[in-house]
Structure formats: C-alpha cells, structure tokens
Amino acid sequence: MTELFQDPALVLLLLFVIPLALRVPIAICLGLSASIVAWMYDMGIDMLPYNFFAGVAKVPLLAIPFFILAGFIMERAGIAARIVTLVETIVGDMTGGLAIATVAVATFWGAVSGSGPATVAALGLILIPAMVKSGYDKPFAAANVSVTSGLAIVIPPSIAFIVYGGIADASVPALFAAGIIPGLLVAGCLMICVYLISKKHGYRGLPRSVPVWKAFKDAFWGVMTPVVILGGIYGGIFTPTEAAAVAIFYGLFVGVFIYRTFNSFEILLEVLVESVKATAVIMFVVTCAGLFAWVASTVGLVEKGAEFLLALSDNPWVLLALINIILLLAGMLLDAISIYYVLLPFLLPLIRHFGWDVVWFGVMMTVNLAIGQITPPVAVNLYVGAQISGLTIEEITPAVIPLLIAAVLALVLIIYVPWFSTFLPALWGL
Image (cartoon, rainbow, N blue to C red; front, top):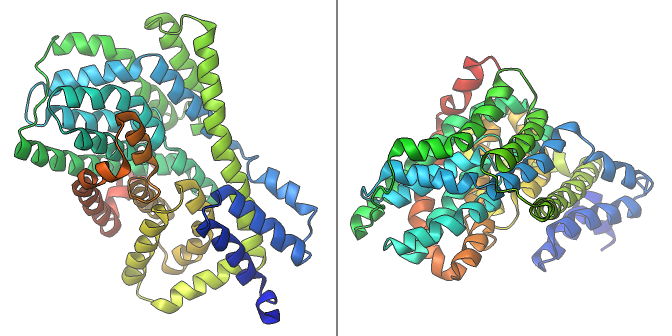
C-alpha cells in the first residue's frame, strides 16, 4: 500500500477513475483528484487558484460564451425555422425529403451554433414533429435529428476546434477550414443512409407550399449568417473570437430589425440566462480539466501514458486505429471538452513522434468525438432528442445504429485520406 502512494501519477489516475466509475460529475472528478494530489505531494497548494484561473483566462476561449449566446439568439430570432422551411421547399416531396432536409439543416446550423446539443434543441422542436406528421417513424425522426446535429462540432465555427486549438497550440482558422470538407463528407454519408432507409419504408417529404425563391427570400438573412462569420475570418477582417462577437450583434440585428422576433426585453433576458447556464457548465469543466492537465503533466502521468501507447506498437497505422478505438470508447462515457483536456496531452507526444499533421489530427479527433455524442451510454445528443420527442434512449437507439455506421465509414475515410482535412488550409495558406 505504501508503494502505491509513492507514485503520484498512479494515485492521480485512481482518484480520477474511481469517482468517475461511481458516476460523480466529470468536473468534480478532475478538479478534486488534481487538488488532492497537489496537496499530498506538496506541489504548491497555493498554485491551484492560479492554474484554475489560467485554465479559462485565455482569449481564444472567449469565443465559447460568444458562440453559445449567438446560437441562442439566432434560434430565438427565428433563423432556424426559416432555414428549415427553405430546405424543405428545395427537397419537396422527394423520397426521404424531410430526412435529407434534416441532415442539410443540421449541417448548416453547425455553422451557426457550434454545439451539438444546442443544435438538437434548436432543430428538434421543429423537425421531429414535422417528420412524424409526414409519416416518418418517431424513433427514426428523433435519431436523425440527434445524430446529424453532432455535425455541429465539426462544421466551423466549432467550440470543439477552439478548445483543441488552445490545448494543441494549433491555428483555429486552419482548424475551421480543415473541418469543412470532412463535415460535408459526414453529411453526405448520412444523406445516403437516410435516403436508403426512407426508400425502404416509403418516407417522403412535404409538397412545396411556396415557391423556392419566396422561401429563399424569407430565409436570406439566415443564409447569410455563416457567410458573415466565416467570410470575415477567412477574409482577414476579424479573428474567430471577434467573429463570435460579430455573430451576436448580427443575430440581434436580424431578430430586432428584420424578423422583429425580439420584441420585448423579457425575451433577451431569457436568452441571456440560458446562455449563461450553458457557458457556466462548459467553463467549469474547462477550468477543472486544465487543473488536472497541469497536475498530470507535473507528476509524469502524461509521459507514462504516451510511453505505454508507444510500447503497444510502433506502427503508426496500427497505433492510429488503437487511438481511434480509445477515443470512441471515451466518447461513450465523457463529454468532448473533458476528453480533449484528459487525453490530448497524452496524444500530443505521439503526434510529434510520428510527424502527424496537428490540424488533420484535430479534425479526426473531433469527428470521432462527434460520433461519441450519439453513442450510449452517455450520448448527450440522444438525451436531448429523447427529451424533445418524449421517447426513451432505448427506443431511439435501434434507429441510431445505421446512421452510426454511416458516420464511422466517413471517419475511416477522414483517418486514412488526410487530404480531406488538409486541402483547404493549404489552399488558403492557413
């Protein structure tokens, strides 16, 4: 027993894993284990407040609360509803029209929200009832919205890319550019999947109630949202953090002056309260995870973990497959931000050892974690979809499996064909 306490890295690991297995919240597991080890091994307990603050006091992380607030504002402004109407009008009553429209809208909304659960909440209230009314199976409707909304952390702007860039010291604009083609690739695979399912069951879309040009005119200001955000970033007009702030004011402008949905102070207050709640949860995890990462690095847990992985195989492709299996399993248990802070420090030495492109690795890791958000037992997106649809996770899960297979096939292409991730950053000199 005494020998056990002589290795602070092992003690830190046990203090983290045991409470986690007992279903203690992840932020508490991270912060408490780090604090206890820092106190037990005299690492400077007075450094904890500094590292706790330093973990969140970073300019790039300012984009997280800004994008969260922007997502809430644009949803309440009526942009989501108008985008849904536009895409539904374009696909019309073709086979699988509403299911394909759901994938397209979720892909688009990922360029507005940046958060998977937020996208499920924004789109599920509109699309799940519409699909059920059109004859779609309710579990399939809920699964389709929940799974495709996972794209939100791949399509830029992405909160996940902001966190990854901060930890890995990678260019956030380059990560945003790198996520475009892989995000569209995943969306394409999901569209093929939902089309085949719809063809088998005879699911269709809705007949066009208005001309396409009229729907586009009504949704124009919403369609311009990603153009303003991403165009400003890649045009060198503003940084990703500044783009998040611009998105807030753009959403307010559309809601107040164009669609006139923000017609009372109470609505704005509700949006602010909801965004503060969502931001507080994420930032608490970020601060505790940063504290854990500092202690883990100090006691040598990061180096030992990297050495252990290298000892399993020195073949980069074998190790890459192993890493992705670990990430998929982690995604079933933890949220994406926690995984970045817990596992990425172990993986960075491997990235340098094999000379892997840090931007490509970030895209691969993010797509993997997006799949984790739809994989039980801790499937964040599915829980939101279940709550909206009134179904249980068990009822939705069978309908998720075909979509999950399609997403994994896209992930395999992203892993073994790095061009999908590296082409646009190289083209734009990022």
